[in-house]
Length: 494
Image (cartoon, rainbow, N blue to C red; front, side, top):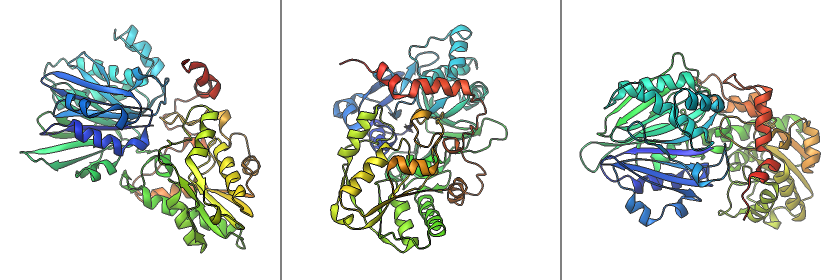
């Protein structure tokens, strides 16, 4: 899971890219970077850490140029290493840099082909570096010393034929411009917008979420469609082309559940409205299963469940209260490596307000349950604060399978719902009652926003992988890489 941005402007872009990355910080808190270009030179700053810590005033001054790209990262492939921070760069042809959100499912096969057939050099284990080199090789094959949209779109078309997996990408070509494109399923989001420049012409921005465009004064032009590409020349001319035949848009449904900001629109679907509908749907299930429920109060586990919890309480006709105070300086816990770190972070992140729990039957609402350990800790907090009973509701269905398209959430064996019934999960997290959203209902709550999208990427819930190239061997290898024991063995010593 990452956030990407690319800008072509009439003025210096680094301050705007910095602002854009701070807005996308929720999509990646491990590393950040900015690359800019001017006068056939690249300027790059990247490092582990938050945007505000990685990019300081002196870096902004040194990142010169009227076009540039940026990236915030959670590690979905490889380790926590500065060399894996993005943007990444390759010097041939022209000088090309990349910011990539997603995960390639055939990167090992591509790696062998690039090294042994295409004679490209790879310096890391990153699938983003693989993707960068595939694009660079395909662009070089076009044979132009001054490529335009025709050659660039041809390179993207050739890339689609070689690459499988999820990839929403912004690429900067030195002296040429910026190209943004999505994989044939459009699994990860990407949107383009523009605004009138203070000088003559327009500024253009490509970003992971529409919120970035809105906040920085850009008008949304459109989502970049599944399998399509947008090219913005260094002179400020924009062109768009579909680069595959008969694309099937299949956006990741977990973007709407958890990953995206609530004020974002992805593929013309409001994240906020989707979460409202999730809450209403879950309330109807509760009323169906327990029409005589004894719930006194609905309390969200902040922040991404707040919208669903509010609508759930309204539909139930029950009081809504915010019973946890959140420390805004602790990152997202579900994706943190190592169980000890996650458990410590939960205690630092949330603190209960006792009077909202004392002598009440409480329904806690969360966006999802991954490992279950966080949920169990929060339930213990509620009991310690005096709750008579603690019920737990998940706005998403049980997460039973690994994500292979850019979310490094857990190894399968570490997922609480893996090979457990809902009743067994209820016992594991020590809830008095547990209720999950049904998958069909979840799909409906999101699809209402744009009925032209006929399907969603739901593999973490149903184990169906849209790229149709995931087998047991692939999942076993992923399992070995993602489990906490393996991560600990790769952790560098102090």
